[in-house]
Amino acid sequence: MKRHGNVEILDLKGQPEDVTALIDCQHYFPAYHMNKSHWFTVCLDGSVSDEEIFPLINESYSRAK
Image 1 (cartoon, rainbow, N blue to C red):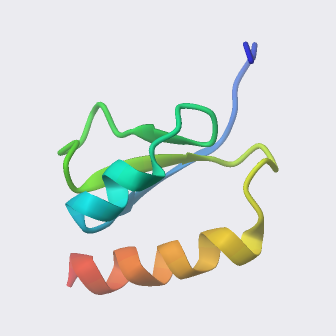
Image 2 (image 1 turned 90 degrees about the vertical axis):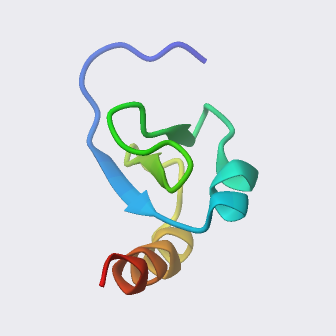
Image 3 (image 1 turned 60 degrees about the vertical axis):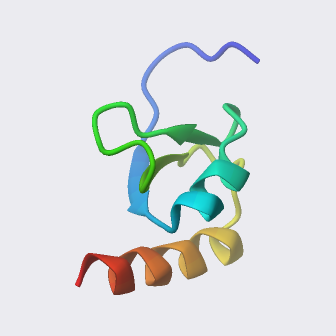
């Protein structure tokens, strides 16, 4: 699906195998400007629920320490 305009994003850190499994290029994208094996980008356009994002944020926070 092509989107036009600006959208908020969130970059998160995860285990490489989890990042690979998440990337679908619709809701989750490779974080091209970060280390692509550990980081991914979440599109915050409402297509990913808060209940799905919050555990990813917690995991990312624990990895960044």
